[in-house]
Image (cartoon, rainbow, N blue to C red; front, side, top):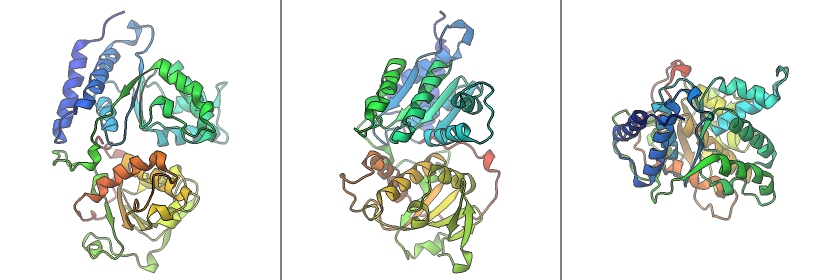
Amino acid sequence: MNPPVPQHAQAMRRHFHEAAARRGFSVAPAQEAAVERLAHLAAELARPAWTFPRPPRDLYVWGPVGRGKSWLVDTFYEGLPTPRKRRLHFHDFFRRLHDGVTRPGARHDGQSAVDSALDELIGDSRVLVFDEFHAHDAGDAMLIARLFRTLLDRRITLVTTSNYPPAGLMPDPLYHHLFEPTIQLIEERMDVLDVTGPVDFRRVAAPAAADGGRRFATGLCLPPGDPGLDELGLPAPEPAEATAVQAHLRELPARAVRGELVWLAFDALCEAATGVPDYLALAERFPTLVLDGVPPLAEASADGRQRFANLVDVACDRDVRLVLIGADPLTGLSAGQALTRDLDRTASRLAMLRRTDRAPVPPPVTPDRAARSRPAPR
């Protein structure tokens, strides 16, 4: 078996440090081991597939929120010279997989529905990067288990991030046993990297970046009636602006649509029977999403809190500017309430919004959404 190509490892290390410098920071000590392992993986992937009998070992990168896991795997992805790669947020991947499996009239040509849907999603990719893998819903556990086994049995290198160690997946004690075979598979087939530095980087003011930063980080949390709303180009909607917007498989009531900005009420989006596919559909169409009537999450229903957390996840991953008007969402939310499994991540991301200086909403434009560059590293 030929050894990894060392110049590719060195090139990937250099790529990480240059990417960090462009963002105005340096690679943290807690991230160095992950950088080294990802550089080694890049060198392994640089070898022709016919020179080794099996793909490199897959990677599972986990740690608390805000430790730069997404930035690590996104930077790795960007530095891979091969075009045979795919990067997806797990919300998006699982939604597309579910749609492919359940689509009426789908032809599978003798394959299982899961295999056929994976073929559509992955194609001939050699590398698949998942961001924010998690397993909370018992109803999805079996499909996720099938997904992982199918991926690990293919000649595809899988790199995934998570806020949970493998043993912490599917934390509900009533259903954890259903996921134990998948946990065992992850621990046997993947190298598990722990990124647990002491700093949540999202809560630390970032230095100015040469590449202009991300749209999500220009989002805001403002109280209702804030006099700055007009200055920001966000006057309250008039009744005549009320309309409906198409989400995934439904229409949602909107207080206003202004070019590529949509203005929605918290109750209409988070207290109604909406889901991640709806938020993904909105993110595809609207670079700016205004949500008003945001209550302290302690006053929202458990389902409303979970939907809000999912919305923040999608907005961050799809680089949507999120403007929240209302109370501080995290006020009065105790650790014992529902959503604790995702609340740390939500709070970390909301901290990015709350520390941002007010920047006017850009005027409506209609660029080709498909041509937008991928989000900058988080």
